[in-house]
Image (cartoon, rainbow, N blue to C red):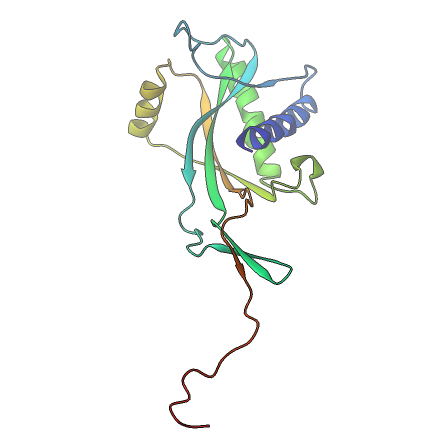
Length: 191
């Protein structure tokens, strides 16, 4: 599900940036470092998309198990998991001015449209109902910690928070029969 959301955003960015530049396929999903060698990934003249964090959205968290009605029975399932994804967009270009230009296209794209739903964007698929893309600002200390934890040298970049990806596998849990009738257990001698 995360991969589908990130791929969708990559396609949206490529479409937008292609309308501004002659080149196509300007955005690539990538790590910042090669996992085997530890050296920096080289994708010249492209924007790299790197998922740097996935967090549970606790504010809109449902505590109660989900109830699904199937032919007079009730099936209990865990509530959907709502997550936010943090995506770091990095400009891989040795010419600093060009890196800033292509990075600006990312910001322009999400300024024009930062909400995506599967009705207006059917390529999201039915499993992703909605995505909200918001810029996430870091102060200098947080930025330094992020790049240090990634083990990479700083590149011109911008961080976005992709909100409310809902993961709901809808696997059946315990099945219980529905209530057929109520008994008057608490009559207390009154009728």
